Length: 452
Image (cartoon, rainbow, N blue to C red; front, side, top):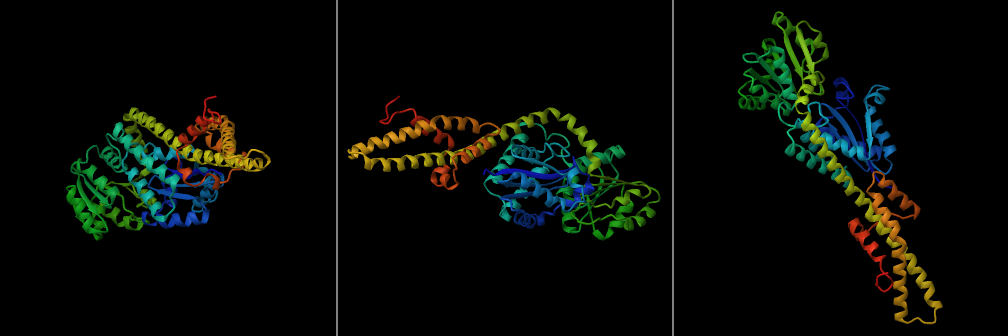
């Protein structure tokens, strides 16, 4: 049976951040998680994407319906009972290909056009390769997804303007104050998201302070962005003096807790503090937002700002969607040829073997058994096979290009009881177009090679 794609997951479109963080997997855990999932669930291939805005499990299986259910169960184990049916989405077949092409091209992101997602998808792909859970289908699918994303960025202006969660966070900070010049901004975290935020803040004239558990990393980032690095131990003091806090650490636990913030709030003497938490899992305990004069925004609160930016790039996004559709069709054509060639080879072997068996039974019954007679009979057998296969293979070739082509190919294999072994060997790698051309051309000639 033909293997097919499935994807099950959740994103900012279906689940709030407090749910997404339950499924989030740290980058260093991706390989181990994949090995366990692939082994426990019996997937042929598997790949796991985990970002601040989505967690998605991709797989291939000869039984995609069961695989989708199994993938859903793997993610549902971390959710509250009954929650999975409400927030987990799933796709199969060509819809999976389209989905991953759109994800890599940042058309399904919170901030359409943001560049970080492509790097995150590539990291997930590398983790799957290291885990040994990527094969021909997922390998080709994701490789072409990367090429699609490159086309989108090169051929459209979708990445122009504010195009990252970090820069959207900075825009929100500017909306709050009108102008950040002279304001004190504290950046918690010097990773990729923190670096992106620092680059955006550099243009605002804010007084930037950077805190990170690695003080050396904080110093490098601060120096590159005209800010000042602060020791991690001075966090409470910095919080008491800041106007805006942007939190983007990779901590699995809350960094800003009510216990920590009680003293901070007292020392601020009713001065408002705006905290923008762009980390998943979150850095800020949601209870902090209930404290006097502390206003907390998380990644889901950035949606309105992101939508305002999208309206500017709507035309570019439409062009990008067109590129995605072109690439999806290109991939599906490759997929169909991959499935078609072994079926053609198997049919040739099956009919050729039958012709040879009948020839061996017939020859002893003939009075004339000279080499010349045998050659004529062999040629006649080949001609009969070619003519019998001509119309079925013509229809198979045409039908394989349709959306339900995989079902047609599977039906042919079932109808003639073709085994995988019959389509294996060196011929399996031949291009389907060449195989079909060879057969249909042969069927147009007679036993001696003359035209009909």
